[in-house]
Image (tube, rainbow, N blue to C red; front, side):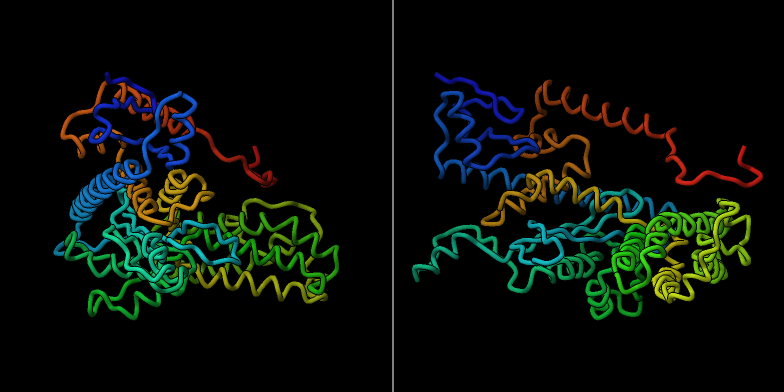
Amino acid sequence: MSFFFFFSGEILKESAMKNAHLYNENWWGFANLEEFLSTLDTPPLSSNMYQKEHDNIATAWEKVAENEMYCAATEEKHLAVQAGKVGIPMLTVVVDGCWAKRSYRINYSSLSGAAAIVGIRTKKVLYMAVRNRYCMVCSRAAAVNKLPGKHCCSKNWHGSCSSMEANIIQEGFQNSVAMYGVKYVKVIGDGDSNVYKTMLDSRFYDELQVEKLESQNHLFRNFCLMLRDIVRDSKAGSITLRQCLGKNILRLRKSVISATAHLTKNEVNFDCCFILQKHILNAPYHVFGDHQNCVYSVWSIQRKNNKNWIPDLLESGLLYKIMNVVSNLADNSKNLLFSANNNCVEQFHSIVIKFMGGKRVNFCLRRSYLARCSGAVISHNSESFMSRVHKSMYNTSPGNFVKSTERRENDLIRRKRKMSWPRCRKSLFLENGPNKN
């Protein structure tokens, strides 16, 4: 006699479990499933049965993810053609990598890593791949000097974990024409120079050189981090001046954002880069009270009667260290004018982390990490994760409960987005100019 039990948002029938397993986005491991079923006084799956169903679902997720990426690339290509791109469409993409283990900037020893190429128009994943440095079956067989049995080996990388991102992105660029009939000519990414060096050395498109635009999120983050390092350095200057700098870091960032927004109101040309560089280099003087070279239309947010800290900063030598950091940001004025960011690929990485359980569980032993990254692609590119997987596995439409759940979740997301539209971020500083009212 067959019976039903509830597992992870799906109702599974025991008699059809071998070919009707369907996991949702909260895919548990074997130990979690065994513990959960034991609390329901239900016989759990055996380890071999679980691994068999795991492989079936992983294959289905990978297949659906490939189809979703192909559809996203087709849509991105169509939008590029509509925008006037003739011949082979040349796309602007966002690239970034993620790893299965948190490094905290000191311990780069992850066994697996992934990287994604996201279209700038559709905000969907066009290409995603995974690199694994470990296979549990092969490792255990090697420990006892035996040949591993027949299995799907997950190990496909022998280098360092820090070089996984560059290799995956290189592979995606090399196959862009063969897979989708497009070329990635502009890349938005973080400050990782190894990835861009790999692109330049590979020369994917012969005479066409790939242009890199750095994300303004990383530019401003590094800008603030370097200023905070100066504040923490006891040898940089007196505590009073360093405290003054610490209180005005956000004002420096806000000043650069205001100057960039002022220049991007009109059509951006080559001269705007030099003008923005001039405004950025003047930002410390404006923030610390010296307004001799300020343009009011740009520096509209001012404080009257504030103390001029420039002579003290200049005498202590702290101003030179501040200007060194500011000049690094001014050199990236072109990237700031383009207003490029990598939010779309960071959103994809957040979905990967959700599938990974917050990077607190090791899913790198076999095939699980690739399957979870594939599930993240499906969830990111489509609004109906369970329906897409169900149709791919069984060639039938899912039940009404699945559809109603997905419809309710999508409606909730739309309402939240709609509520956030009229909201504006409160200004960090009050205006004291003639337009204050």
